Image 1 (cartoon, rainbow, N blue to C red):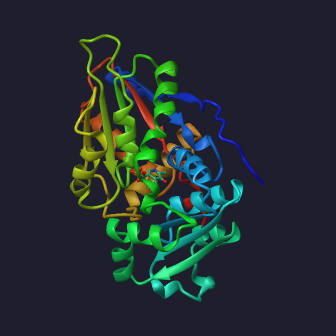
Image 2 (image 1 turned 180 degrees about the vertical axis):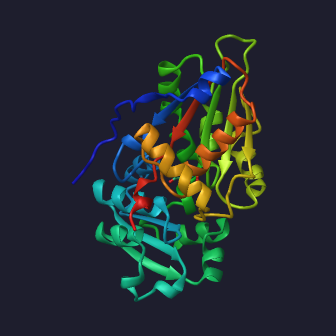
Amino acid sequence: MTANFSEKPTPLTELHDSLFERRQIRVWIKRDDLNHPLIQGNKWHKLKYNLQAAKKQGKSTLLTFGGAYSNHIAATAYAAKSFDFQSVGMIRGDELAGKPERWSPTLKTAHQNGMQLKFLSRQSYRLKASPDFLDELKQQQPDAYVLPEGGSNDLAIKGFEPLMQELEQQSPNWTHLLTATGTGGTLAGLIKYAKNHPDDSTTRLIQGVAVLKQGEALLPQIRQWLNHKSAVKWQLLTLYHDGGYAKLSNPLQILKSQFESQHQIPLDPVYTIKMIHAFYQQVEQGAFPSGSQIILLHTGGLQGNAT
Ligand SMILES: *Cc1c(COP(=O)(O)O)cnc(C)c1O
């Protein structure tokens, strides 16, 4: 089975809420969750040019890193299958080795899609996912194309160029763009390929909402990906992690169900719900000036709803 790299634009759907009317703002959600069922949302953008590079370099295997609930692991396994690569997933947590009955739905699906899973203790995982070790790994396994944890590298960031062009066509006057942030690769890609507002006196702001604690730690890497340049303002919001990665409090579970039933749009429990929460909090605080045209990027991750 060999898939192809062509892409259809995903819908940009306006959200209606009396709160938005009162604040005189307009809000859209960019439905990138609809781009692919398993190589979904931002994971497709991040993988696309890496897959092409791996093919060009004649690699037979994709090798990458992630936790038991990683959308990147699920996406890489499926992408490998679709584009005729073998795949190896180095998974954080050796307590899962040899115990497939305890695997998360993410790991089970990845395994069904042909990914060979190797479980590492948390300590050796930390070591092996480090940049130095990745270089060593590339030398030891010349057939493998090695992707870092979360799939964020320079080619991943370049994958957001077509998305930003698409948004510019669909909504030339946008003022704000929000995304959920894990490694910061997606945020860096959006910022890097964002243009000024066509009306020079209007500023644009891109916000990343960190889903893990200590999000500030991502900033040096994000600045490096950006080469310290950007045409728009941007910020990383670090107070909306709701207890940490993959933690979801009751109030956020309720917000998730309310949003899903009001707008008939599914969210994922790890990433997009935290972006939506940060958005509503700011609307309530009056943080968006009247006249704002706000885009919420749905980065996908819906496979994480499987229990
Ligand atoms: C992986 C993921 C993110 C985080 O992307 P980064 O580029 O690592 O910041 C955001 N949303 C969803 C749904 C994801 O699966």
